[in-house]
Image (cartoon, rainbow, N blue to C red; front, side, top):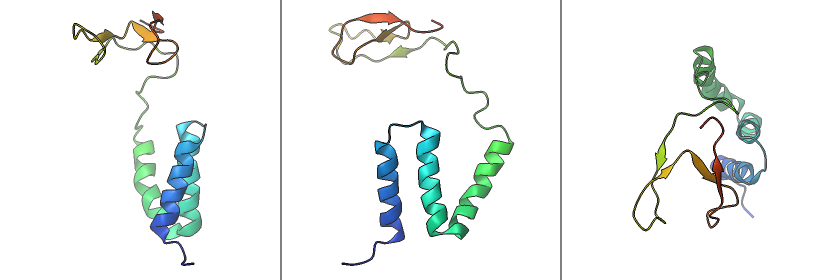
Length: 106
């Protein structure tokens, strides 16, 4: 059996992270930890621009959970008349359900 390459190991870590039932931050940390374990020098190179983004407040203006969202429209491939779906309604139990409820902040 041949040894796995760096790329193969990172791809496996990314696939594991995709399958995790965890917040994105936890999944990304899982991949970052694997990179750091395999190549601290490479991890440091990646950490520098991430630290710069964080230092400049990247993402700070993004909506937080529970914040009101600006109204928007989504295309509807299931609508007979081609009318878009409004952000004022969302599906409760999946794509095949017709039950709808108002969105938070709508």
